[in-house]
Length: 472
Image 1: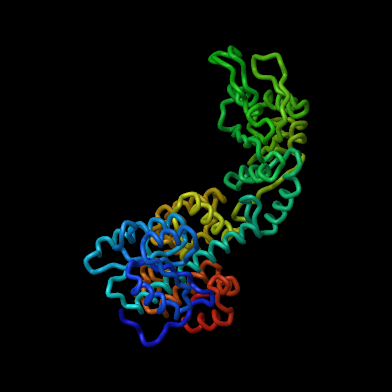
Image 2: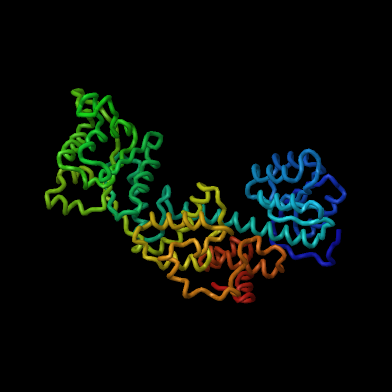
């Protein structure tokens, strides 16, 4: 095992926790002693079984494991690490005759592999790169979490004056039983707001029941709302429970309420005033305890003037009014929404992505979003599904959005390495340059946020930006 004469500089003041699993304890201890010189807090496990115990009982940033051991081999250590410590990086060590097994390990999530006899300089470099990547991912996750907490309300995210006002209203009205009418174009998040109201109300443990009025024929709308008894009309073979009964104790969300026929409006008004329903074909009234939240993309006041919507019902459902602006009128919220949706989608899909490329970010900010936040979310989901290297780029954008920046892209030699795997074997200056640029991209050039993400001082970051001539 060769050892460089000069130790590498520390990447962080916080020690990197490294578990070394190798049945050759002498070799493992020599590795630990050398890694300790670059600010690694190392522990040695002399068998796969002991390594498995330590993975289960302690937290690690990097696990270095030999592939060929006893019953619990390196592949099993890799599997256990990814199961117990999904964020941790795994570096596998293998002899020249076991390259195929090492490739298998890479396919199952190992960060990289190194061959024996081990060059400790290569190992140090791999550990430094792995820990730097891990810190960036964790800081990025923390940043996204803090953005949600600072600028959000149960998924309703924004920092524009309009959204600050809306979030303040939501926080005030959520604990009450007041009826709420939400206005907004398609895709502005009307159901999202309704769910946020429900989740922050005393009714949160009861049902939230949505119903889109425009999606139903007039002939079955009343049955959907109030239910029916067997024989109430042709085809009514048995009793059916309506949405009001399903939502009892909780919240009923009526979307596109302006599409409701006039005769159904009369019955809805009576239910809201008397807090009772009657199933179609029944005589008995049933008490209900439901909060109503309604939404529309139409001008209901004009509908009232034109005789298309009852004035008394309008005032009954419009106790509290919330007007959601289209995304084009709050474009400053797009970066927050991008990070929020990426965080949510990576959690839902299990796919890993660190953020957006500079070109993709520029395109997303330049687009006018006629489909509003629904279109933005669907676009980011598309990018995530098509992504191959952990950085969402313009390749995953629909053509009408990608074209906004394709003519302005830099030459290929100005691009950063494609994914973290592309950094393996690169000089440390190139790795450092890559991660600083990634942090700047993720924070829209905010040096204070980027320095916190990288765990370096702001002055150091400023010096590095000048040194590497980075884009801010």
